Amino acid sequence: MKLPLLSGRQVLTALQRLGFVELHRRGSHVKMEHPDGRRIVFPFHDEIDRRTLKGALQDAGVDLDEFLAAVK
Image 1 (cartoon, rainbow, N blue to C red):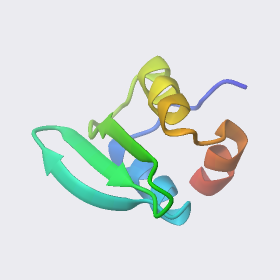
Image 2 (image 1 turned 30 degrees about the vertical axis):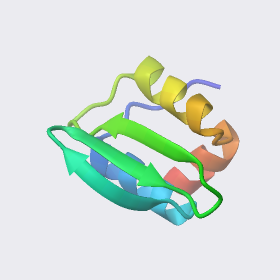
Image 3 (image 1 turned 180 degrees about the vertical axis):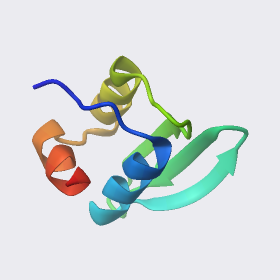
């Protein structure tokens, strides 16, 4: 399934809906952590490259379908 073009704000909101909490921001990157210990770092830009986002989601163990459901 192809990811839509998302902004950093949309990704942040979707991850918060999935239970992730923002740890900190440094420069243009946001670090978030889930209560079960999974972490994700992604760029907080107007448009996030689809491949960058997909890789970050895979590294954090976030299911793509679950993430897309949280975006809507």
